[in-house]
Structure formats: structure tokens, C-alpha cells
View 1 (tube, one colour):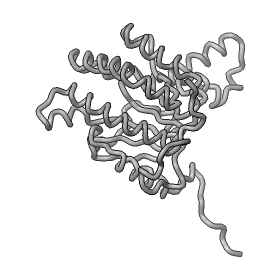
View 2 (tube, helix red, strand yellow; view 1 turned 90 degrees about the vertical axis):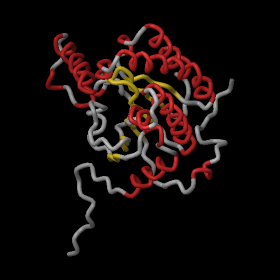
View 3 (cartoon, one colour; view 1 turned 180 degrees about the vertical axis):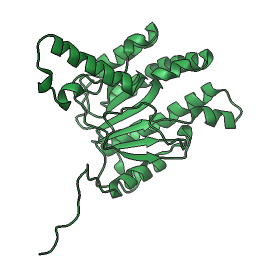
Length: 258
């Protein structure tokens, strides 16, 4: 099947209302609040995670349509293994169903899938599913969809530091190492830093998510529970981002008059 050259080509951008001229190149989302969403409705937590996949489908499609280049989502952290076994089992089952039901559409829409995290630590069926998804979409050139799965930010940095230590032990001069050398050992090697990070459900923390990559990200904490995070609210976040003055530690003040 012939791939779409551009993720935006042939799409109806007008359906999203006024799109900001200044869009983030890389959006990261902590999809929080699935369990609380289900609890408020008297449902099992697994139903909240299922509802969250519907919101995710909408946000992925919109990101592709309007021309976001990179979208990274926090799906399952290394700490999430400490949750009750039935919830972890439900999340792993949902992961399999997600790739089974969505991979055709993602591939047809030119989306490239990348997994950030310790894939080897996943159960065999889930590990094989994500490897197949990455292999199938490797040549796609549209939206870069990264899924943080069995991911921990500190562990990622430690992993990269160990690689530098191995290079030093092999004879390289550690004094020659720069930030780019450590970045080459991260799961996100070759990707740009995060421009905008959104966390839903009202929590005000990053929870070990992309600590290296978000040092200059604009942060938006939204009270909406993830299953209720609509395309309209996403657009509001993008518009808020467009209005912010990003200085990266510098100053954007006009020069003083002489």
C-alpha cells in the first residue's frame, strides 16, 4: 500500500477550528485519571483505561491532522508494576488489544511507532506485539508516535550513563563527552526535546517522565480526567502554548534605547 507523503495532506484541518500558527514540534502527554474516571462511575478501573484509549485515538488523529511532528505518551511506568495484579493484567491485555485494533489505521495514516522503555521487561506476547508494530511502521514519515512503556526517566539516564562508562573503560577520554553523547544513549536518541508537556487529572508532578527531554518544555496541568480530554481541550492547550514566550534561559526584552 502506498504511504501518504504528508500526514496533513488530504486531511480536513478546518474541522478543528482555528489552529495556532506556532505549534509545538514535540508534545508529550501524561494520560492520568483513568482510574478516578471509572471510580466516579462505579466501574472497574479497567473500564477507565479502556475509555482512555478512545481519548488517545482522538488525540493521535488530531495531532497527525494538524501537523504535530512528535507525540509521546506515558502508557506504563516502571513503578506501575506495583499496582494490583488484576489492574496490571488488565493494562497488559489492553495493550495487546490496542495494537491489534489500531495498527492498521496507524500504518495507513503514515504514523511511525516507537517504544520508549525496557521492552525486554514486558511479557512475551506484549513484547512481540510492540516489536511488530515498530517494524511495520519503521519507514513511515508522518507523525512520530512514541509510547513510553515500562519506562522510568531516572533508569533511562542511568542506562545512558552506563554506556558512557563503557566507552570510557574502552579508552575514550571522559573529558570529551558532551550532552550529545549522553543523549545518544537515551531511548529518545535522534528525537527533539519536548516543547509542550500536558498532564491531565490535576496532578502537579512529572512522575519520572522524560526528565532529560523536558528541561525547557512548557508545562500545562489540566484538571480534566484523561478519558474526558477532548480535541477541544487539546486545542486550548496548543493555543496556550502558542501564547507563551519561550526564552530557554535567555531574555527576549527589546534593546535599550541609546
